[in-house]
Length: 201
Image (cartoon, rainbow, N blue to C red; front, side, top):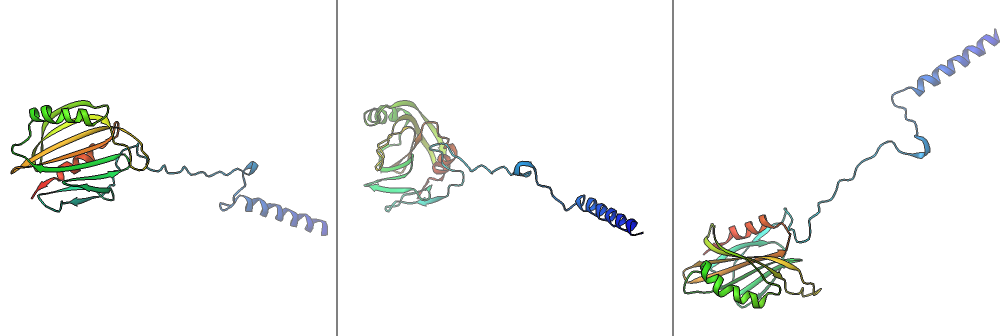
């Protein structure tokens, strides 16, 4: 009788162990300490050199003498000299120059007067083309070209850049808006935001 009772208890213990091991809440350690669950890291947003981020904010700029407003990227470094103002950030640059003018610029006048000056001033100058484009502020003469940027004030680095120079005119005043960045950078949308924001006052 005692032998039968011991065997019965042993059987119950074995059955309970099997049931417990099959429960849904149980986990078994994988061999060699490996883990069975893995998560793929979310890649961080990467922008090629010179690409302005899609989430870039813009702020309105108006010169002290008034006359026009234009949106420029927020946080960019700003320097002024006479009627010219420059906004820079890393490899990109926006230059705004205003002056009185007797007549509106044309494709012919830009090719005959502006291009020769740029050929002398811009190292490795390569002509693109001059065309007339429309913006909310009116028509402008757009001159595209390539060349080396001025050396960085801190690092001295020179970047081969693509330039877009927009010449706006109204009531005897001309504003030249030049946008530049490394060749190959995709700044079509940011440059469009800037040039479409230009307004006469």
